[in-house]
Structures are given as structure tokens and as C-alpha cells.
Image 1 (cartoon, rainbow, N blue to C red):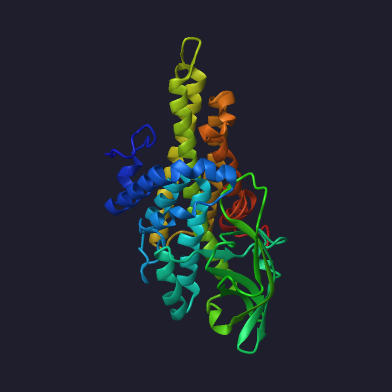
Image 2: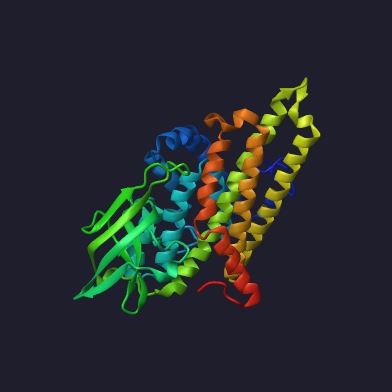
Length: 390
């Protein structure tokens, strides 16, 4: 059976019954935070391109930062619980959810999987308590999907390394306390922990975004950025990077699902209120067909991401599985958002209805953590054994 927080109006197949009590508790407390604290500021933050820093203490109090990391003060959430936290944040504000997936998920998971004991002890408790903000510095101006061919260099210099290169679309880079910078060392791709403000590390906010406008994303210039050898993470190579990106794709899938649910709820509620020809437009067959299709696609995505979370928890998920979850849910959410905008008619483009904000923000989610095409080819490689790219 379902519960009071996920009614059949949204949870058509009662997927809430597939969750554990702990997972439902995470979902509910993140939802309360999102509705009570995040929603009142989300529209203005998006319009003004201002990140709501004042909400970070309340976010930390939710005890979800650190995600699936179990030690060093992190909560040790199940993959499904972390996904539910992502879903509830994205349901209200995509920009804030993207901040969280990096600082609260990708960065601590990477340090836990690749870092030294000293690095874990120094950073994981602070990231979990919200006392530090993290950034994952991988993408370059000429190397997005092609992350295996990084041109950022890490040159040995006595008891340290000098980092030189350029990075782009780096979330949290202008506000972070620790940045995991990936570059090419003499022995392969390696990750280094840089602690801004730091000489040679310059982050510049990317202006003029029309998606996730309040998310702090930046260009990063590394110019003679020297770090001690102790700041290099011992586990590296493209395999480590690919593993972290694969986990990030699960977060992106839950993220897209949250935005799709938001757009469906807005469209359904609007259709029940909006009258044309003397009756609510929800009574028209064509509008009902759209709502049914939207909810059906959302339902399939809910079942998919929950099962993916269970497979991740058991160590049975493959790169192809996470790639497919990301590509399919983001494509679904894009379609649901566009259909919601259609149902709202001219009002759909107004900021105060939120649909257009979600529609724009989903363009970013559709692209990051591997484009639709790249994730398709990751899946294709897995089912055929043949790589379409190297």
C-alpha cells in the first residue's frame, strides 16, 4: 500500500511501497525542506542568477550530504535514499539539486573511493556537515564527453605537482573549499585536491546561462597551480573517473524524474482549474490523453531508478545500466515538461507557473554526465561488445 506522501495521483503504481522505512524518512524530510525553505526562494534565485547560500545549514541538518558514504561522519544512505533526496530537491529547484549532487554526492563519494586516509579524515566529515563545499573539476573546453583525452597537465615538481590547463562547466567552483582537479600526470590521469582560494586556481562564473541559472558554474583556469604530493589521490586512471561518472548518472536520472513529476503535477492541477467551453480542460479527451501519457512515462522511470538503486546496492549495476537510466529519464522528463507547457497554453511560458523554468533547466540535465548520444553508445558497447568510440 502507499502512504500519505505519495498518492496515486503521482505514484500511479504505488512505488512508495517498494521503499524501506529509512528511505521514506529521507524522502519526507527532504520534501519538507524543499517545500518550506527552498520553494519560497527558487524562482527569484533563478531569475537573479543568485545561489541561496543561506539554505546550506538547513540542508546540512537533513543528514543526506555524503550520500552513500558510510564512514567519516557521512550518512551511509542507500542508493535509492540518495536518489529520493535528489528527486525531492529537483522537484522544486534544479539548480539547488545540481549543487547538492556535486558537493553532497559526487565529491564525497570520489574522495571515499580514491583518497588517502588523511584526505578522507580531513574532508568527508566537513562535507557531510555542510562545513565545506566540494567541486568536481573534470570537463575541459575541448573535452566534454571525451574525458579520456584531458589536456590539463600535472607536472612533478619536487615534493609536489604543478597543474596547468583549463576547465569548463564546473559546478560550485566559485564557492568551493575543496576541488577535485583531474589532470594528466606522467603515469596517467590523476586527481588532486586543491583548496581554494589557492594560487594558480582561478574560477570565473559563467554568465548568461538560460538553464540552472542559480547554480554556480564556472570556467576554471589552472596556471602554475602547485599542490603538495600529499594532495594527489592514490587511486586514478580513467577507470576511476568513469566509475564516478557512472554513479553520477544515477543521480541525474533521479534528478530528471523529480522535474518530470513537478511538471506533471503543475499540468494536472492547472487542467483541473482552467475552464474552457464551460468546463475544466481536464475533462477533454486530448488533455486526459496527455496526462495519462505523462504519468505513464513517469511511472516507468520510477520503477527503473528504484531497481537501478537496488542493483547498485548489491554491486550488480553495470555502466550500461546507469547510462540507460540517465538517457531515458532525461529524455522522458524533457517530453513531459514540453507537454506540460502545452497544457498550460500561453500561461506555460510565465515564470510563476514554474514549467518553463523546469523545461529550461532540463536542457542542462539532458547534457551533463554524458550526452544522450554518448550514453546510448555506452549501452550499445555493453550489449554488442563493440565500441563505437574510444
